[in-house]
Length: 564
Image (cartoon, rainbow, N blue to C red; front, side, top):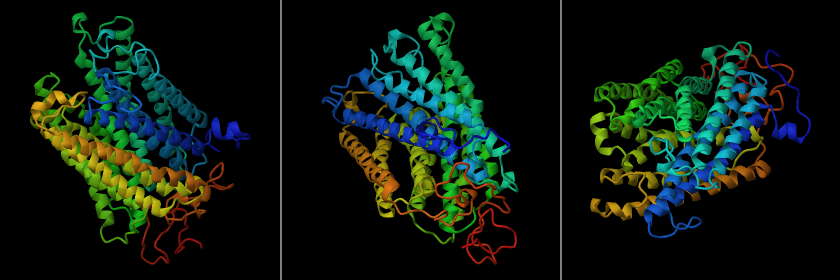
């Protein structure tokens, strides 16, 4: 083989723990991300209970002080972005599907891949440990703005904040390793006949996300080092009295932070792009258009960051150009979504659980996109900035690509991962409950935002002058409880199906991409002695003259359909 090949591991530790097999590493990322999603969800529940009943104890926490509430906000946001979205959408799905979809036996650098996961795991341990150190977990917000984060006098948490910074730094390093592997594997290890414009959309989007991450993360790492030095060594990078500027950190953070939105969004859209053709029995509409829109999204993601800072005190002359770039970046994303809708048009739609979550993702994400136009306008943003409107908007912008895409992908590739089918009925229950309670949780927050309720404040009773909105807070909290409870059918289905689920065929969905030509689950090396060759594009459904409505990529020319 042309890459860092490795023999099939022997023994439990080498096979399942310190494994170099991309499929095992994908599952390690998956289980770690799912555990952290539970932690992050419970933190959100604690925040909602406190906001609804601020004078009462929260079960398991007791009385919630303002410092504790700040720690809940910080750790919930940090976990959901860095320890849930990234390990699940990139670490799990990227690791699992890229080698299989390009016809490779493994990642280009299996040892680096293993190191990536264990660096990530170390960061997870450090982050969880920060809950239990003297002074508690970091209370400086997931954006860690100075001066709150730069001095011990403001924020306390003498150990929690440095541990938080260290954990984030290690997590970023882990995904730098992973991104290098994704890019190299997709470009260099393509099997015979597989051209770049024959790659599935998800591979393009995983590559684009990895490249965006690669070029945007450097300033944040530098900013974090300077923040740690300000806090521990007495430097003054962000201290105006010492000649520093706290606004500098915001620029460094958001230069990474807004491209990070697309690091998360693009893999989610890639998952949806693989599911829609299968369950509409049509080729993806505008394949090349989507690829170029993805590239345009990546390029534009680097010139929109300052729309997060319209009221921060930066030069107001920057507001108009950043409003313009913010509106421009919505164009390629909209092109992608319209291509998805056009794929559905006049298709033979089959509403299986993966398709339900894919359609739910599009519906909910559209709310996030439309409401984001308000924040992208510097004139309108003045009125809703730092209110609950923003909380509602970014949850509608991030939950669809993270959780709806995640669930769509899990139900879709579960047969390939574990060799068994998940229960369809429980999957449908999971979808409808999740769809319902996502909207019950976050739609009321738009109303709170219009009323002027500020976010990141631990005691809503001090805003009584804004009107009685307690019933709205209660509704949102009920939604959060329901949303967490809605995941119980999924967890039962996910783990029980590993043992009692119906055994899966190699290609239960009649899909055309290469991963479905491997056994379910794929063995070490993915295929037998010969790798598959590619003769056609990834989405040949309902082709004229074919005896069936799907032509796999490895089907030789002249054949009218796959072998039975």
